[in-house]
Length: 210
Image (cartoon, rainbow, N blue to C red):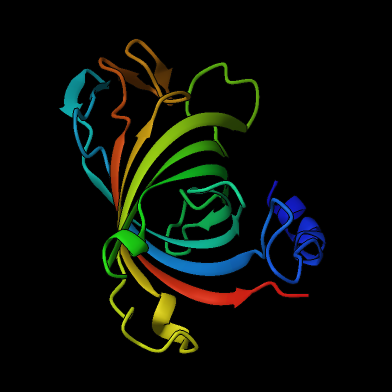
């Protein structure tokens, strides 16, 4: 899916009309250094070698490359992301996400300082359940993002004008270990926690203009 974004981007940009967009507007690329806290709520109990312990809260640094595609539909956009964990030795397989974004609060409503959106996400990431049938699986993910536009008072043509500090709450609805799953010698006594919190610094990289 991520490769398709790069192939389609020039065509999407070319579709832009002189006074607006032809449904899909000019894409923008963003780089997002991200700090994610997993097992945020309801960490599962896991039994290993006869010892039962609660899954620890994990902190993960991720680097996200995002292509956002605005649309002519009010408050609706698309986002495609490739996600890497460059500092991890073992848990560093890339992930791909395709998002449908719904704006709940727009910067026009808050004097340019705050925005919030709800995302429905197809998350394509390493399999986490027994019998998944492949190394990667699709997972349904819901995400609520709230961003502070810290440099919104800069002139529009300044690079940092569109930079954001963002908090993201994620709920992964499918594809996680369930109670009774045995994975790598570890028996899950509860369903894995679907909740995580991410702190994101959103940096504009480039609008993909023709």
